[in-house]
Length: 372
Image (cartoon, rainbow, N blue to C red; front, side, top):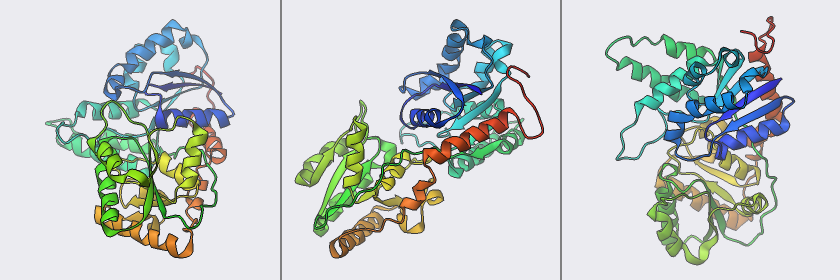
């Protein structure tokens, strides 16, 4: 099949999904993408910009079997801006996140226009894929609550239509491969997330300061991308943690990044926003023991012993227990490797291919490229 893939925010997990799928797919992809900056502007203008690219490159005349896009695109607007020919292929929209569960800064109101964009995009697609049930459920529940608040015409039928065409399709993960950790070293704690407020860095560093007060030996690597506005807690933590820091900052080289994951003992999340958690899954595949809050998408994919109660005290107590286990036994359990094996691209890419084929030509039906 020929697939037109549209990625209006092409970076991070959005790019990783497409790159991994294309590398393992039996189908042919043409990708239209925009840079991963200013997500609100991307959601506002992407349909106009992408429709112009399609017209200028003559892509509307090509016989695509399917159009795949992410929820950063207003698919309803795109279909209205394009010639009839490009509207005909089967359409799939992938939700990496949704705009009703994505956390906003405490001083910003939620822009509900983006939530309605999620709704109209989902209604415009033949199939709606989510990376987790948490993502799907928070969108559907949030849309229902939003429509019930409207002054009139608040029917929930559109939400039911989205639910009927929804499917959980976790992304593939680049499995890193585990390696033995050196014995005789204190617990090595890993942070592998964006340096932004929604990943909860204040809680993470507060927990590390509590370990210092308790006299618990540890080392720490703080990885992840940073942007123009880095929370102040990172600067303060770097000064406070000093010689305990093993690595600090973004690692552009994937081999070096994988080496950093194999060095650490535990990967910690304090996130207020996680619809799947690719970075955590990669770290676990490298042999890190997961220490994750009992919320968001984490309970869906990891066993209970990977979860703490979501508080700073709960995180500190868990890290203390693991530090003692490492001290007395020299190692930590590795059974969580099984939890991420299922996300191997060797399994995920064929599953996504098959799911896309079922949308293009449902069982018992035939559909040719370019037909309505």
